[in-house]
Length: 58
Image 1 (cartoon, helix red, strand yellow):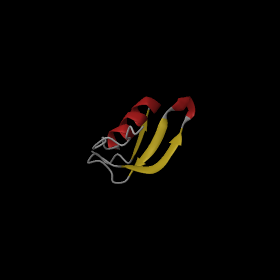
Image 2 (cartoon, helix red, strand yellow):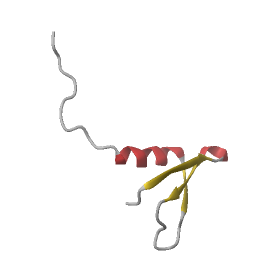
Image 3 (cartoon, helix red, strand yellow):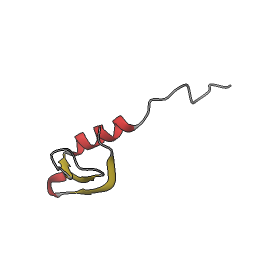
Image 4 (cartoon, helix red, strand yellow):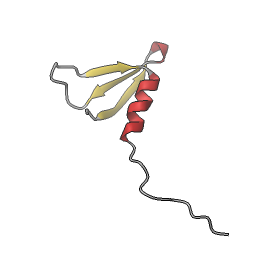
C-alpha cells in the first residue's frame, strides 16, 4: 500500500487531491478521491487498540 503524503487539498465538488510520496509503476503521482474514500484510507492507517485504555475505578 502506498503511504500518503501530508499534501492534500479539497477540490470543487468536495473531492480530495493528494500527491503520492513515490509514483506508482504506471507513473501516477497524484490521486483524486471522494472524501469518504479518503477518510477510509486514513482510518486504515490507525492501529487497533492493544488493550483497555480506561479503567473503571469507583
